[in-house]
Image (tube, rainbow, N blue to C red; front, side, top):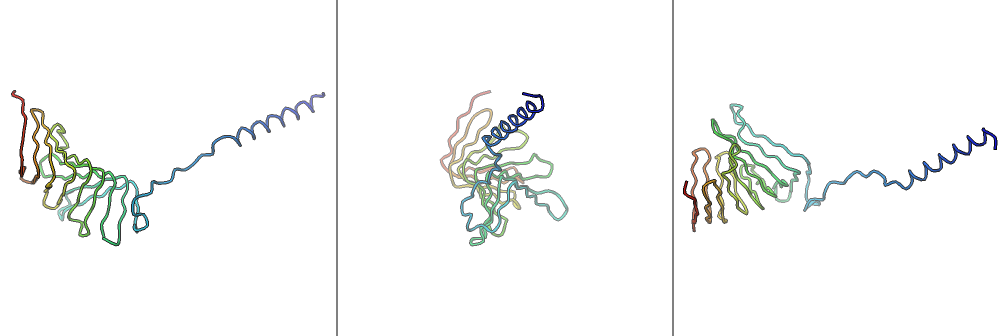
Length: 185
């Protein structure tokens, strides 16, 4: 075989092998966003949400972050997946709450957190509350629930049914069946 035919043969063989390998490779797929519940009802669907609320003097009062948001026009509720709500307090550490699902009511001044709710001081997370659901009223810097609550602290734990927390005044009220266990210093 002469050198021209050998080069042509090798070139064609290499091309065929490259085309075969390319044809059998898995094509790159762009992942589709997960389908939210009530997708047919939602008129807005956004991923990577970050909402910030300021008062009239320009001070940041609270923020809400989440994986995705969808607005349901039939009820005028806004649902946020895996929300993180931060309440900013003047001259005090911010309070943060996170959950599996958030529900912002139509007038946007009440926010419900549902599913594995954790509430904690952003600077010292050793003090935290856990509850199945929590109602947050950001304008009043208040949170409340009538569900079971567990308060975890470095020196012990407290369990109760129902809680009202006023973060502006640093006041906490546990409602019923309060039980605690504490370790002496």
